[in-house]
Length: 202
Image (cartoon, rainbow, N blue to C red; front, side, top):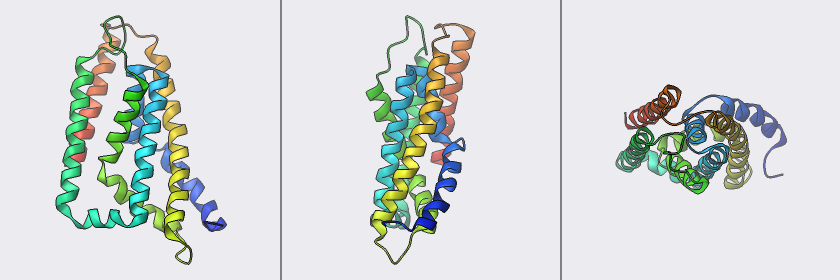
């Protein structure tokens, strides 16, 4: 087998525990579900998962360690991600969540944003480098093991975050643009994205 069965059995519950723990990815998919509906929630979740798989591939190839060893490269990626999140926060603040004056959010756009948000978060690749190697058998090819574990994490993430986005999408249908509830949710989502931007920056 590509991975050791015992290590795989140990990884599955640990990976699921990480998937269900609220974090930036889950909050991002929640916000996208509120903005564009259930389909956008699932699309954002898929984009986040694809970005995660790319991080896993880089870590498996050893590039993650290289990025971690070069503070300049790390900072460039970090600030790019923070700027992108700040831009999303501004757009969310200015765009009604629902109602006739709310421009549609396409699933492709939600997917792209999810991918960019994840891939510009260098802390994710450092997390992968800290977590996944605990389940790697050094006697076997390392890269295939990274990819298997990364795929399992992505499947769990897509499922959990997608369901969160779907719930938010159903909630969106009950909103009307301009109401106090709609404005409160919009400001909350914008604050969330702004907070993620600050968190990534510092």
